[in-house]
Image 1 (cartoon, rainbow, N blue to C red):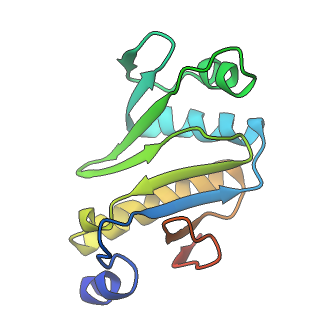
Image 2 (cartoon, rainbow, N blue to C red):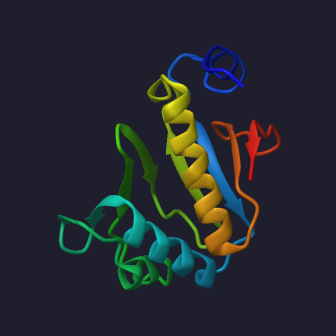
Length: 144
């Protein structure tokens, strides 16, 4: 595969639309595995809604408190793959979703970094990981 093909078929620009990375049918245990591997392997910026501060690790207990409605404070995370930023919003424990702006994938090396991330989280959770157009889970562009 070359970058021209990937930019045309996977990372095409479509008026600001993102790509979604999904792990579907997850449990809290899957989230814990994902958080552990992300905290260990990547540079993370976690906005803790309870403290309103940015931290260098995702705090699983804070996320649990949000899901169990012990707090209504929104938490977000940015996972950095060098120049590529993935966003996570912790909407539900039933699926792990990350967003990526496709224009960040400029080289085959960028694509390979993203693929390494997808394989890493797939292995950590022992689940299928898919990359789709934004909010279109049925259209799988890449699968690990």
